[in-house]
Amino acid sequence: MRKVIYILILSTIALMGISIKNYSNKDVETGSLQSSYEDYEDLIIKYGNKNEKIVALTFDDGPDEDFTPQILDILKKYNVKATFYVIGEKVQYNKKIIKREYEEGHEIGNHTYTHINVSKNGYNKIKKEIADTQEAVKSVTGEYPKTFRPPYRAISRDMCEIVKQKDMNIVLWSYVDARDWSSPGVNSIIKTIEDGIKNGCIILLHDYNKLRTPKSQTIEALDIIIPDLLQKGYKFVTISELIDHLEVNTNN
Image 1 (cartoon, rainbow, N blue to C red):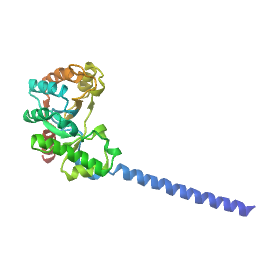
Image 2: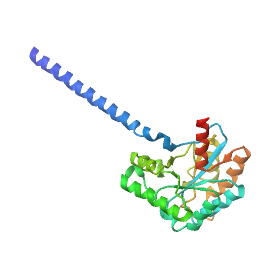
Image 3: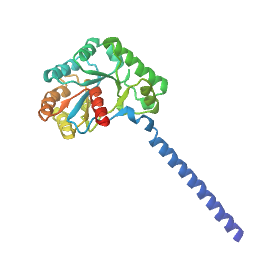
Image 4: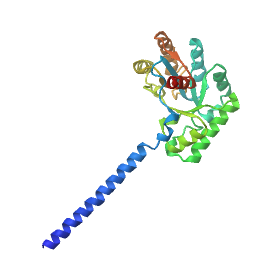
């Protein structure tokens, strides 16, 4: 009887050891996952210089033949610059709009060719999506985009490596996502931005909306937001300018 109990005790200890080992392995795997993008931290931009009253307006998912020209009209009205993260396959159908964005001093960024989720796609697909968009923009402006924004804010190691190889930055957004694509109401868009605005803020908006009205809620909100932020002393910059301000701050 004692022998049986002894064997049971040894078996239990052995099983506990295996369990602890497996748990430890999971910890290592989790730690590895958390640190998997450390090599690319210098590529990822989430906000600008927090010591300056600068903000960056960014617009995803265009160009849109109806709404983008209206956004450009408002930006011109207040003499502010913005950054447009364009879908590559839309560029060929809206070359005049892309050209206008470029000629009026706005920045054009890469938002993949077909709005894919990079975390659900492999290296070759991501590389082609980014490369095709780079070429589409260059065919109109003569210059490659310097920055890339992943749809859905999705991140993958393959994407980071491809962007690094192309000497680009990955640009997310900070503090403010007005979710204007969902048409939450003009007042909701304005309140979200004004409540969340901070120095160095990258504001996420869209120049495409499925609700096909003569004027999108984003456009209506911009005509209130821009003069309000200007009155509060904020300066609007492109993403490249925002990055330049970060680098100046780091070097000083």
